[in-house]
Amino acid sequence: MTSPTYIVDGVLTEGEPWVFLESFAGDGSTTSVTWSSGTGTKNWSQYEALYLVFQGRAAGSSSQMHIRFNGDSGLDNYRYTYTSGDNGYVSGGSANESTSTEIGRFAASSSTALYTGGGHMTIHNPGTGAFKNTQSQYGWTYSNTAYGGVQNMSTTWRGQGAITSILLQMGSGSTAMLATGSYIGMWGLLPRMVNP
Image 1 (tube, rainbow, N blue to C red):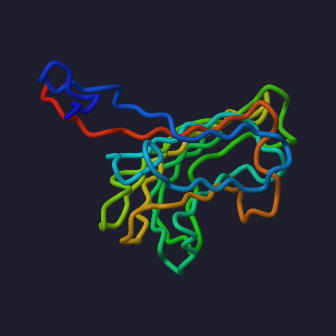
Image 2: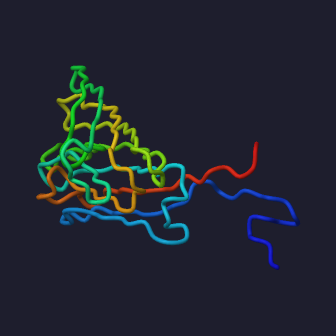
């Protein structure tokens, strides 16, 4: 019998824990992106977390990117708490989103050239039957006369099934997503097999 690739000379070894899964490059016209779980490294249920990184400019006037899991647009299924600072003002709160939750903001197409937005989002335990928790951190700047903003957001998606699809769109999905030169990437984090 041949040993699996993670057993070398009878010793359990551990590979790279971060596995690249998906990416999207802004093209100025695409209105939404859907990624789906698959087989092999694309099977999201094997990961402890999914990690998204994004940076760039919006292609239209809508600057807020939203995420939806498994096509779920059920009422009150996305519940979030946030803290935010924008142009010198600080705020916070919590609410229910009926169809999706915000994960990031970008400089709108009307913003001063070279200004962008970016950040990252962690989706915990995507393959479990528990409600899924996410954390997002992101920042943005619009122009020379604005200080920009930063936001931290924690969301609970009240879906008990494993996450099998992710939909990304700007606002309600009626406008183009990201300008050319913008980027979204997703990685999976494997559990440890060997104690440090």
